[in-house]
Image (cartoon, rainbow, N blue to C red; front, side, top):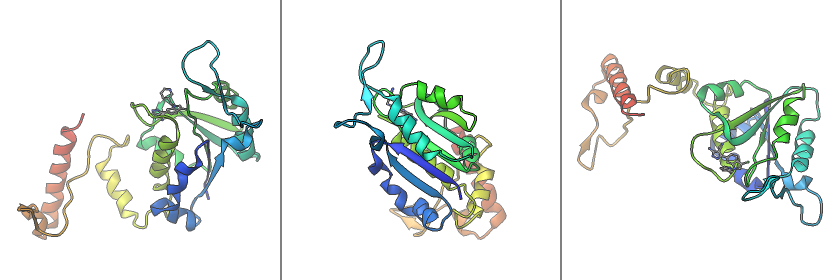
Length: 230
Ligand code: JFT
């Protein structure tokens, strides 16, 4: 089963991984997720994990030593480890990246805070033969750290693991409405009961039982919607 190790100074962010689809996948033994508190690898009474930046400037930078200890501890075996370092400067996360990561056996997520992690951590693991390092951002907006970005990535990745979605039809359907990069053609609009809500009716064709016509209608609506984006 794939293993995901998450290193953070805020383990509480990851309590939501006990619920819903991901919680069920963990209980079913489809994925092993372990959360690690970076502070367990900090020294001194204050258990400090940050320091002032060389060269000056605002804010604090995360010290390399606790990261080195934490990463070494979760990777003390022979296999290849994919180290994902969240950073606003990273490659933009998309559906094709989610598909690639979903096929890997051991992902380690480094969730930093403050102004970022001392760059030598990325540099060092990049030279290690048993590591592949990926610098990733989830999009062009500013977050306060890597935790929420990691939750987004985990949700996108774990639902692609075989057996996690009860109904593999949902995945097959996505491959029709999504292009290879996960963009362009969006979903058709969805409706459920009641047939009239606040004077708004469900499009009649959806009540017709004519499956070919419904398929055509949904395709047209999906195209209309994709043209209205970006
Ligand atoms: C922000 C982030 C992502 C992603 C990792 C670490 C510190 C705060 C920060 C924000 C702006 C400039 C530092 C992070 C992200 C995103 C990821 C860190 N910060 N410098 N922000 N926005 N889309 N992924 Cl470590």
